[in-house]
Structure formats: structure tokens, C-alpha cells
Image 1 (cartoon, rainbow, N blue to C red):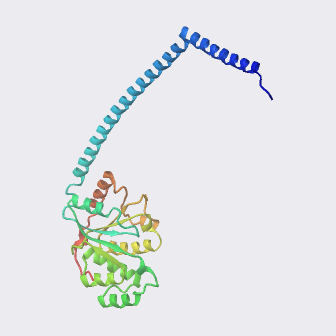
Image 2: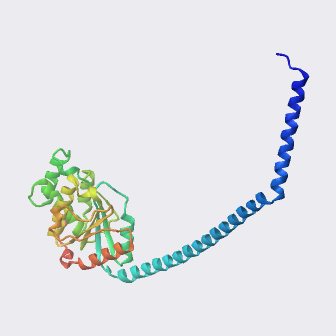
Image 3: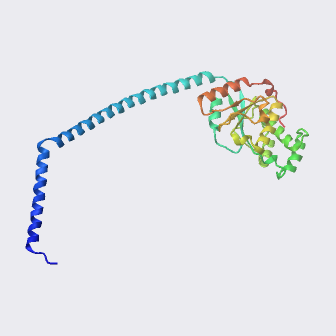
Length: 285
């Protein structure tokens, strides 16, 4: 297709007409200030909104600072109240801790510190396993022979071991017996002072009160109770009650060990739990 000169002239005229029309529209818009006024209104509105948001931000910061100050005051009050309520409440007391169940390393240090803050002493940390509950326990026959030699009660071997371990906890450990129990993988012990214990705390979570762990704990609790020491259960997971097998035994169950209120409740429970007959030392074996 051939393009002649008339086509080029027409194209140039169209371009210049469009340019002129654009200049005319722009001049008219700026002449009546409509666009400029609208822009100024938008800018003014945005500035007002930003100013209001800044005021709200400052107000919220002041509220946060005020709440933080109140929270600090409350924390100080709770700490002082804790010290007031637990001070010397366990003075002269000797308390054993049995770490119940498979979850180790949760709450043990806090519990020891609490007892010491209240003036008490931890006589030992006991970590029993549930292996000796099983019929397949490889040291079963050896344990039967040894416990007969030690003069432990002529009970079925599981109950005999539970009662015997309870005597070690309550009346104080005998080194040769404890060494054998550890060799049998029945229990691990730490922080032993050699003193008798008037109260035994069972520290555990939900898994401590299930299956073979529950059988093991119940066997030891039977022995502790028969020997006159008090049992207190301490929660570290969130259960709110003991299993039915233990509820009828009037065992205090304390939760919220990580909170100040729970710590005060525990010390109060320990203070009420003292029985003097646990100090009537007998032959621990």
C-alpha cells in the first residue's frame, strides 16, 4: 500500500490538534483551582488523621506504662506476701522428695529452693523406676534373697521392696542397701543427708499416676504412710486431682508449683502435715 503526502499532512494535523486540546484542558483545570483545592483538602484530612493516631499512640503508651507499674507493684507485693507466709514455716523439718514418673528435671530445683526458703531441709532426692514392678525384672530372684537376708517383711516381693524403700526414705538411708537398690536399677538417689524424713513429697505430672508408675508410687506411698510420715503430692503438669486409688487416702494435692500462690499453699500443706512419729527412728533395713 502506498502512502501519499496527503496522509502525512493529515497525521500531523491530528497530532497538533490533540496537543492543543490537552493544553487547553490543563489550563482550564488550573485556572479554576478545583484540582488544587481537592488536593489540599485530602492533605489536610490526612494530617489530621495522623495527628489523632499520634495522640492515640501516646495515650496507649501511657496506659501501658501505668499497667506495667501496677504489675511491678503487684509482683513485689506477691513476693513479699510469699516471704511473709512461708518464713520459718518449715523450720527444723526434714522433707524427702520422690520424683515420680518419667518426666525429670521439671520443678525439682524450684521445690528444693522453696523448702529451704521456708526454713526446712531436703533429706534426699529419690528417683524410683518402675522396672521392679515387672515379673520380668532381671534382679527379682537376687532381690528376694537379699531382702530376706536384711530381714525385710515377708510380703510378696513387689510390696516388700516398696515397704523397704519407704523405710530407707523415712528413717534414713543405709549405704549398703542403697547401693544394692541402685545396682538393681530400682532407684537413683541424690542430695542425701542421712536424716530421717517426717514428710515425703511426691513430685510428678499426669504420667506419674498411670500404669506401672502408679503401681510403683502406690506401693511406696503405702510404706511411707505405715511408717507415720505424711505424703504430699505436687503437680508439675496441670492435673487437678489424684487417681481414685489415692483420693481416699486424704493426700494433699498441690498444683501451680511455678506460681507464688501455689508455693504458699504447698508450704501451708507441709506445715499441717507434720507427724512426730516419723522421727521415732527404727532399723531402716
